[in-house]
Image: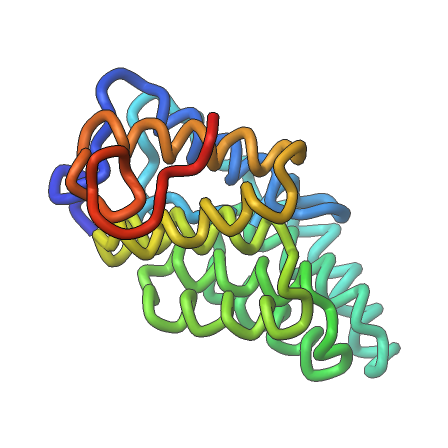
Length: 210
């Protein structure tokens, strides 16, 4: 996906920092500090972002041996997904997250990590469908709602859909760190795209408070 084509282009670096925050805080546990949030825009590094850490081959091999020895252990499979995601081996990350969810389909964090891995490998529709799965598990999962908005904005250029995700997030968890980022994004939409439904002066829903 060509970042220059994204209509949600905010002056300066604010939204880039927002995406970086999502990428840095998507997961709640495990060696990967992230899975989304929303992804790295077609797996391309934004300007100024450091290269991914090299894959810890020894740790990966050890975890895979453990996974083979413990076929019912979903946690190990999530750990492998995290490890491969951090190294930007999204194909392998996806495989392990999917395997973990077969064993524990109610793991909302793994589901959202899988969605972000799909997005990072440029599978936009699969990412959005997986976010829907996450929200069926936990309709108030703040990281899912934040990332859903990012993928709608960047992946689909759907500012109205992104606004819906972020406004809902702000309404249910106004004091959460995710809501803080959502408010920043909503303010940016209101500033740069005032005709978007939900923005001040536009028909339909009122904008979220900041």
